[in-house]
Structures are given as C-alpha cells and as structure tokens.
Length: 377
Image (cartoon, rainbow, N blue to C red):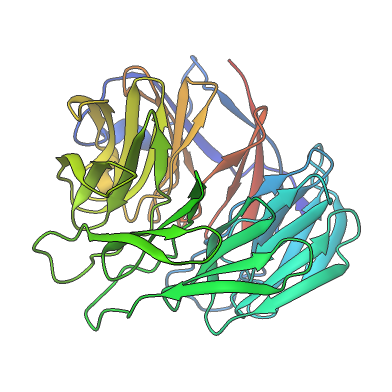
C-alpha cells in the first residue's frame, strides 16, 4: 500500500550543539535551513492491530541496486523498487522478520533470518527458495559471508556456520543463556582473518576458528554487572584493534589475537560501535552518541534525551551519523561536531536501525511504515 508522506513530521535543527539533552525545539516545524534527508515515498508493511500498547519493528533493509529487501513482523520479506516503493515480489516468512537481509552478488541470493528460526536463501529476482536452514530460535542481526560460509546468530545464544551454496550445516557454537534479565537483541558476528568474533547474552565475546568453530578465546565484558550484560553489537576490527560494545560495560578496544583489553570507555547501555578513520563512534542508551579518538578519549557526545533503546549507527558519506531511538524516532547528527541536524518523528518511535545505499536512507517505523529518504549534501 502506497500513501503520500504528507503526514510526516521531519524536524530540522541546524545549529544545536552536542549536549546531554535535547531542547524543546524538537517539536517545532522544520526550519528554513533544511536537512540532509528528504522523503521520497513510504509504504505500509504491517497492518497495525486494533490494540497494541507499544508496537516495535526490528527489521532493517538492504539493497542490490534493483530491489530494496526488507521484512517486518507482518510476516513477509518484501522486494521493493527503490525509486517508488513498488512491489517486485513478496515472500511469506511465518512469524515475521526482525533481522537485516544479506545480498550475495555472485549468486544473486538474498539471505534473511526469520522469527520462525529459519534462515532463507532466496533468488533475488523472484523470491523463490534456493535453500532453508532451520534453528530453534528467532534469527536476528545480519548473516555474514566469508570464504564460502554463512555465519549467523539466533536467540538461543548460538552461532551457526552453513555452506553458502547449499545451506548445509558446518558447525555451531553456543553459550548458556544467563538466568537474569537480558536485553532483547541478537548480535551480528564478524568474520575476519580466519576467525569469527561474536558476542553473547551472557556478556562474553568469543573468537572462534572460522572453519571449525573451535574456541580460540572468550572474554567476559560484563565487569561486575549481573544483569543486562548482553553483547548484541556487531564487533568491528580496524587498524589491528577489535572494538566491542557491552550493554552493561561500555566500549572495549581489544587485541583481536588474544582478547586482551587495550582500553575501556565505561557507558551503560552501549548498543553499537562504528569506526571511521581516526574516530570511534558508539551509541549508548543512557548517554547518547559518543565520538572518541583511537586512544579512547572523548571528542564529543550528543545526548539525544535518551528516549528508549538506541539502534546501531549508520555513517553516511563520512559526514552524517544516523541512529534510531525506540520511543522517539531517527536522528541525524553531524559526524564531525556532534551537532544535531535533523529529527524524524513518525509517531510510536523507531526501533530498527536505519540503512542506506549511499544515496537513499531507509527507515522502518514501529507502526510498520517503511520510508525512503533522498540524501542530499
């Protein structure tokens, strides 16, 4: 269903500095300065129930240039045309989708994990099934491809490795889920240098042999915390350093070979990490978006008023940082200064992380509306 985007509230704040809280100007109409995002189209992917106190959508989009692939809790994976949101094809996924698809260009295959515990390998042009692999827990995060294998995680604290061509099982690794409270989230593993690095709900980060799943090392990043110790953020390796975000512990810079900690920046509610050049960016629900140098010293912080859980960060053109807040919407922050540039308030917030093809930005709101924005500047 395509509808005009006239109801959108896209607020622009052109000169607000990085700070620990958002000013009341957020609720005002767009300013004369404009912002980097402009709505192109929107499409409703999930028909809202008659009564739902706090709806949430967790899925994010990816694209192959021909289609934008995105799922929703409505029970489908959609292949939409990026110019107008028209439907190319639609695949029924029982239980819905809370993950981000992966596109493999060599085989023109789309991989997507379902809340039904199945990883689907689909033909990118038709949506026809090429293979499926069934697990016993919902699949989240994003599948990862390296050297002919696909790595992915599910909600049972398991990492799987399967053959990218056939979907055949190769190995799996699991850790015992903690009995205390955890954050809803499933991490995306990192495949690098013959190893797979993955975080788990018990607060451990593990380095595994990419071919066998054998444990090379495992480190707890929970500190003294006893609950909400999850590592749901995708690890990052840049410049010989492994970066990982622990919800209870904050941001860690580590030696990828041994797991030894180089430095640690404490911040409660850390949900993602991103490295670009000589800067490290991470989001923490309690304190907002942070920018550090490579030694862990803070350059700036943008508080964002901490309105619900913060999503993974997206960096566009090395200039704009995008992050979603579950109880608010999607923010655009200047990557250089931390200045808040723009705020998208769709109503009921945005839990899913924004995504981009470099020229467009895609956002799925908690009410099931999927937006495409043109990116200027």
